Length: 160
View 1 (cartoon, one colour):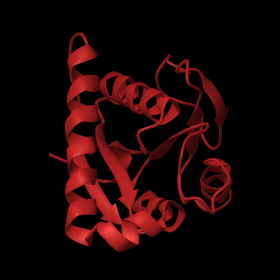
View 2 (tube, one colour):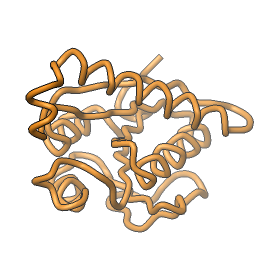
View 3 (cartoon, one colour):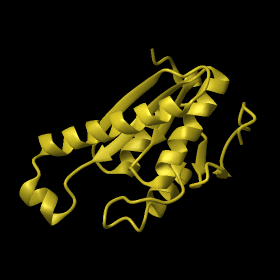
């Protein structure tokens, strides 16, 4: 069960290699610190094809399916204790949604690059927004699962 702010790690994913590396890093950090993980995928119609051919229900189902598949695969790779995980498919732009989730998180974890909306220049805008405005520390993870940037208090595990 997801507990309070002191035990929750929020990780934003978009299906990119870097965001999935961030998911694996967050799961290991959570296991090492007895924390839970909330995995957030943001969706909304943002291409002409989405608007013309994809209903909100279809986009939501696709988001839920991607979340379930990626979380299941990442947990299957883990050896030993596995943290509690909440999968959260949210309609909206990633920056505002993730910033709202930081109010209940002890840590926000994001991939260094990835695919987001066409208007966002390759995930950098989301990371930059979260680094500037998050109400908890932010960890940015590279595709090789290394920590590229960290704000706030030192990490409690040796995974940094």
